[in-house]
Image 1 (cartoon, rainbow, N blue to C red):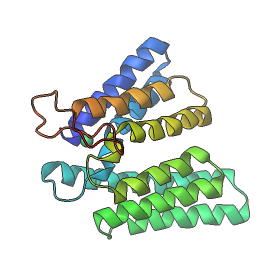
Image 2 (image 1 turned 90 degrees about the vertical axis):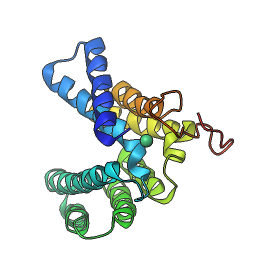
Image 3 (image 1 turned 120 degrees about the horizontal axis):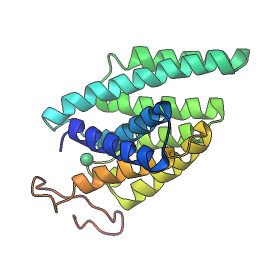
Image 4 (image 1 turned 120 degrees about the vertical axis):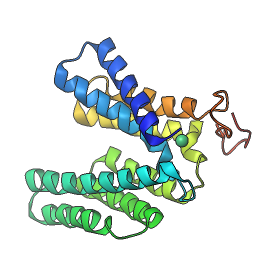
Length: 208
Ligand SMILES: [Zn+2]
């Protein structure tokens, strides 16, 4: 399944969640966004040998890195005092400039380190863990740990802290369902998938 389909399914999960929580339009948009991004996250591990999906993911990851860079700069300028401010701005600039000319996988590792450092600098635990997630995704084979229960559990912790950070009910549920929808859509039980996912890594390599 390609990135667009995963994002659409994840966004739908966000929409259903906002319906359940009876949210206002702004919150609905945020929840749809959370579901869509969470629905794409497991494929952060794509290894560069895949055809169509790769171009999309490559561009997406680059855009995400630049977006994180811009957000890091804005957040640092608004919220932090002098020394920390320039750390944040520097990290943001490295992400924006760096992401435009380095290779995909290296870019992903560096983005992970950048996000991780941003999380440390800003003392935001969810951001730090997201950086760890991205870094690990850049190092493991495609459809391995990010597509497993262990990976989901790790992401669930990030989503929980992200909801607390935003203070918006439904963020956690949207992220969780969006992420889980990706794994289900990649499972062998769907005829379109020749390969399944190794759900029980590292305990078992059986594909589901
Ligand atoms: Zn996938």
